[in-house]
Amino acid sequence: MKNIVIFSGTTEGRLLAESFACAGIASTVCVATDYGEEVMKPDPLIEVHIGRLDETEMESFFKEKNTDLVFDATHPYAVEASRNIKMAASSLGIDYRRIERERTSHEPDFNVSYVKDTAEAVKLLESSESRILLTTGSKELKYFAGFRDRLYVRVLPSIRAIELCEQAGIEKSHIIAEQGPFTYEENLALLKRYDIGLLVTKASGKAGGYDQKIRAAQAAGVSVITIERRQDQAVSVPEKSITVIGAGCGERTLTLEAANAIRNADIIIASERLLNYPLVKSNPCVKVKAFMPDDIADAIAKSGCSRAVVLFSGDSGFYSGAKGLLSLEEKNGIKIRVLPGISSVQMLSSATHLPYDGAAIRSYHGKTLKLNEIKETVENNRLSYFLFSGKSDASAVSDFLKDMKVQIFTGKDLGSAGQRIFEGKLPEDLPERALYITVVKNLCVE
Image 1 (cartoon, one colour):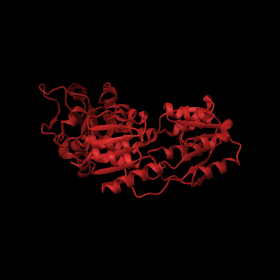
Image 2: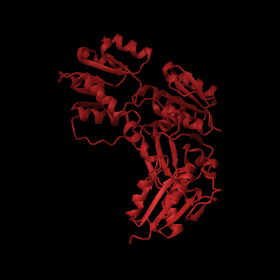
Image 3: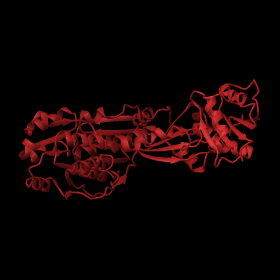
Image 4: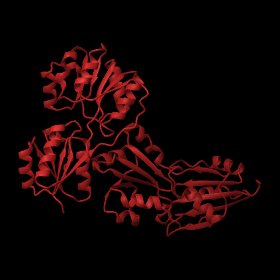
């Protein structure tokens, strides 16, 4: 096993360490300040070293840790730190990898000015009298001190950042100390609250929330000055993504694409029944029992994992909890991929040879049964499919419709080893807790 050292000054450094930990790999993470340690998720496989190191100190540190591999995940603008890391690693023959943020892809269809450094940004600001929101961090505040009367700064909520603001003469009411990245809505609200006319930012990539800032500025009619990032040889840390999978009616009905996603996941979130799928159990990744979108998002955030899989029964587009998850893509900027599954309607249709195209399909799963509503549906359709919460609901419907000229077929636990299909009245000895679906054929409707 390689001895890994990660220099972390960004979200990517933390995610990399936590991803290694999820995979059972230990690492030492170097952060410059106490705040850098605070945002790290405690883990026995992650050792945190606090304090800045020069090139000579880095060499000694690498020797002490018998380092084999160094990841440089410092901020894209921390040029001196990266140079020291690279030189120290090179002098000892240690493999060096630069971690790069994934690029953004917004359309430059409004007023965005790109500059190569802080000096150019300051020069542009001199030609404007608008209120300024500065989101480039606290280290370069002194260069913007000439605009302090109309300057608002968003910095990390650390003691050092606040001290630098005070040293630059920034009024307390102009200091916004918050931890990002921020959503589109949060950025937009901030721009409007302080009547900002100019946003100064760095091209910090997706993980730094750059796209969300640009979208908010565009919506608010705010001009943007972007300090471009340095170019460097790098490897990219993938952004967090969620694959939402319709798990079908049993493991054997999973699509190949869904099965591969499950095998490659570093966290799987599902109901207890789906977490017991043999394929799911064979993946030694993090597993969480959760159902609600906010609980799922919270579980992913706390895990530090980047390849999340969320399983729902049946098809992801058919009366599925997957619907509620899609809002996370807009709300939190999390990339979501949806993979379909085979629904119980498809399974029962195949078993009974009763096609569902043109059929009425209603779900009473987790809902109050409305027998008159069901009767009306049956009367107006040749074929009607109904999903139920348990055996008592399915039995109540077959009893209620017994005097009508209909054929009734009910499926229990379709797709599983316990699959059974019944015609007419259900046997009394069936368990209440199972997955029941009924199709009713109205013989009076052509």
